[in-house]
Image (cartoon, rainbow, N blue to C red; front, side, top):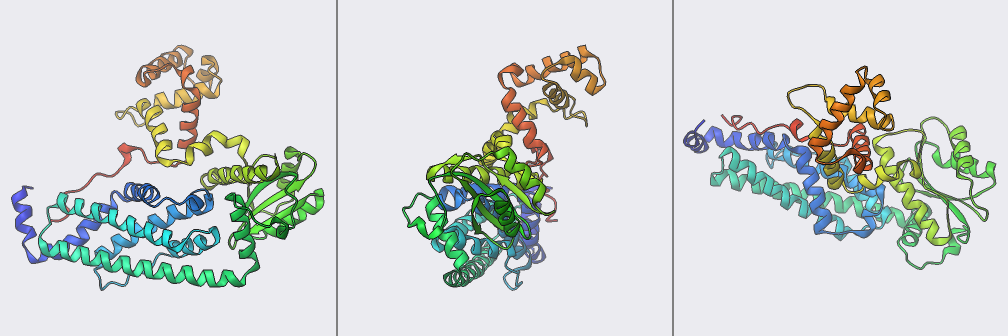
Amino acid sequence: MSRGRHQAQGRDGRSREQAPAAVAAQLRLRHEEIAQTILAYVRDTVPDRIGDLDVEYALGLRAAVTAAVEYGLTGIEQGDEGLVPIPVEVLIQARRAVRSGVGLDTVLRRYIAGYTLLEDFVMDAVEVLDVGNPSTLRHLRRVQATLLDRLTSAIADEYCAEQALGRRSSAQRLGQRVQRLLMGEAIDASELRYEFDAWHLGVIALGKHAEQALRRVAAQIGRTILLVPRGEETVWAWFGDRRDLAVAQLTAVLQAKLPPGVILAIGEPAHGLNGFRLTHRQAEAAHLVAQHRPQALTRYADVALLAFALRDEALARSLVDIYLMPLDDPRKGYPVLRETVRAYLAAERNATSAAAALGVARHTVESRIRKAEERLGRMLPACVAEIEVALRLEELGCFVSPQDQPRIDRSSIT
């Protein structure tokens, strides 16, 4: 369709009415990309050391941004008179911000920054569809301003309500004291009734009755425990003892005694106040992996590299792009080179074992490995760790490959 025809339709009354829905439809094709770009942008533009170090809060921020983008697109479709419900993920994140010690000013500034960037995406779609007549642009900007005002008002109300509740809640006061301690502030730790000059094992537990189950385990093994409720079904915990904690034994007891449906992420034993902080950070990293691959227990030592990669989604995605994408052949539906490399590494680089696992001849595996090295531009032994992490990221289903991203349909406005 020619540009002239687009312009003619852009001046037509019915096309102007259809333009917002067409813009929203085009942006939905890029929903994941837009949400990830906005997430990175608000973190860079409005830095928040407290929230970004809290894995639960960081995961909630990702869900809230995704929901806020959808809220914006739905509002564009329905117009400023369409009362689009405030996303529940956004309200939950506002309450979580209070518990994590993130200021309301930071929360609101991040949403304002995110909607500023969303407006850029909207204007890009308007240009692609060639519907940028003055009335359409004024309408879209008015709608976005209305949506942002409703969103920030709801967030502020939810935040203040949770803050007022927190002043009356001993559990939330405990959580705030522990959060300050984790951030390195000097507080009167005697109020916590927990010995810090000892060995600690950090735990994050999810599920109903997790708190009661952890208390029973602590009593059974004769360890002190500090429990900090972080929501309806999330608990931070530390097992403490003056003796070095036998993590393998404790892990076995946890797996045997916890009720079905409770998921644990644990750090590694560490000593003293710094160890208290470190083992919790490790548990948070393990928890990040468990969010993608739920299982009864995830231990940091077993997923350290994977957890490190997941902390920066852009860099994690680049691992997949650098070490796996070159192994794909768009002409074939089955990723032969990628699966051969996977089998080869699983067989500890034994071509005979890999061939048996794949049901092909040894020389076929060797030929494919050489071809994989050519495409990667490096020998496999030099990048084994990177490839293995990339393969595990792929197994978690974290990312959509670029060739799987939907393309913009320029004809939907007609």
